Amino acid sequence: MKQVFKSLSFIVIIGLAASCGGPQGEKAQTGDAQEVSVATGDVSLKVDVAASNVEWTGAKPTGQHNGTISISDGSVMLSNGVVVGGKFTIDMNSIVNSDLTSEEDNAKLVGHLKSPDFFDVAKYPTAVFEITGADAVNGTPGVTHNITGNLTMKDVTKSITFPAMVKIEDNKLTAETPAFVIDRTQWNVQYGSKTLFDNLKDKFINDEISLKINLTAEM
Image 1 (spheres, rainbow, N blue to C red):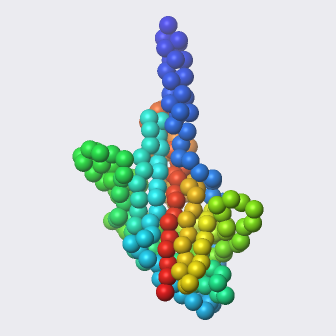
Image 2 (cartoon, rainbow, N blue to C red):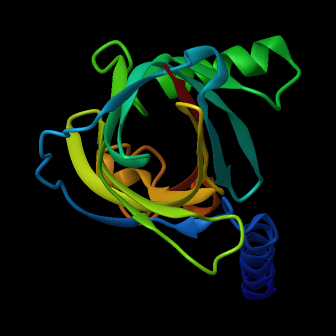
Image 3 (tube, one colour):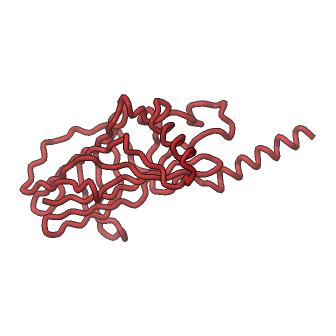
């Protein structure tokens, strides 16, 4: 009977994980940080921080949470109407949760995300993304470019590549990405990782987090 109960419990845990499915999105290509060449362009656009942010989603077997992080500064360099470089700063202290309506639960989650368990914002108040390449894409609905750049978060810098819809008109750039997924543990965000800790049972948190970048930059 005990064995049956254990088997049923295991099935329930697997079912919960499957029903949640984890954060949605195409997995970003990740590799070693790339050398950043000095971008030479004829136009420098300043990021409109009020119109730009990063949306995030994290998940565990019992559900998921989502929210936003503000972009505090940045610029994009154009040459003949083509993106040749850029850099923007993400204010990790601005993490917001959007789904928890209880003020207490919301504050508890945000406080935990800011703690050393996760992003340790007291020590690492910002993350930075620096563009190293923007390759045009044809034939993919909703995507005009594959953007490659170095993402620095906590004490780690890695190159990531993800798709984006980029529009440039009258010295104004807007860029939106579909949701894409990165493995947070590659940036030393390890709390609750089932691949790093084997004693968590159903208390783990997915290693993968989903991000969606919304960026506006203009003269």
